[in-house]
Structures are given as C-alpha cells and as structure tokens.
Length: 168
Image (cartoon, rainbow, N blue to C red; front, top):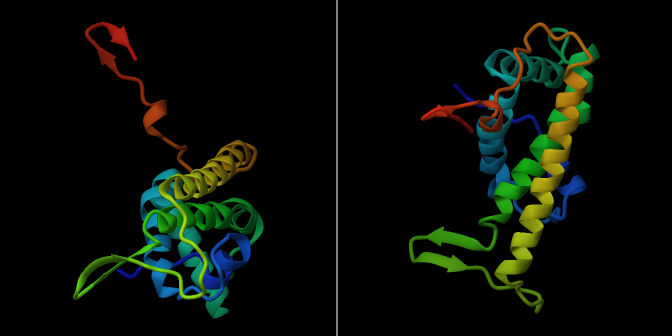
C-alpha cells in the first residue's frame, strides 16, 4: 500500500532552512520515514489512517476531507511534526550521495564552505526540539477534544517495567 505523504515539498521549504532549490526527491523518503516511525506510532494506526484518508479526500476534492478537530489536529500539530521530524531525518544525510562510484560528500558549487559535524548536529537538535515541542503540545491538546480513533499514546518512557523487584 502506498503511503500518503501528508506534506507537499513546499511545506518543507517554506517552514525550514531547506532551500527551495533542493530537489524534492532528496527528502521525500524522509517524509515517509517520519510518518511511519514517528507520527503513526504517536497517533495509533486507526487515527493515522483516518488522517491520511481524509487528507487524500481534501487533496482530491472527494468526500468530506479534513474537517473540525481533525483539520485542527492536522494543521496545528501533525503537519508541523512531519515538517520538523522530516527535516531532522534529512539533515542526518543531506551532505552525502551514494552513486555507482560509491559514497561521496557533496561540495558546494557556489564557493560556500561546508559545515562541520558539530554544526550539523546543532541543526538536527534544533529540528528535533521543534518536533518534540509540537508533539508535547499535541498531547496536551488531544486530551481536550473527543476523537473516537484516539487510543492514547504509549511511548517508551510511559511504559513501566519491573526488574528484580525494582521499578524503573
């Protein structure tokens, strides 16, 4: 089954440091990865599938599309989480290319200097912080509305485990 991408390429370039000249195919797989590994587990499969289906209806002009609380959830939280989560993932590998001749690091064409790993790590952390801020705000908001598909969020930190009588 094809994954519905919940963003357009313009959503990324208008809301992040990624330049509009960057080929969309360079980060399209990162949007999919973000949705599958960050958004879907957060929302749960039922709510995630509803958002994707309604988003497709909105794009195609069929059905009712995203309305009410679902529209607000998408616009205010999900879209922002996908934007910043995808950017975090993209920045991890943006400077590298894999081709028939092997793995290479891209060199600037306009004479600008390349940045070091610490600077890239700073950009990654910045995107991660933005993602987590939107995620936290989403979790606060979702408790204030009635969404039938929402089953709650189970994150690794919310699971309690007992080992040898100790509670961690």
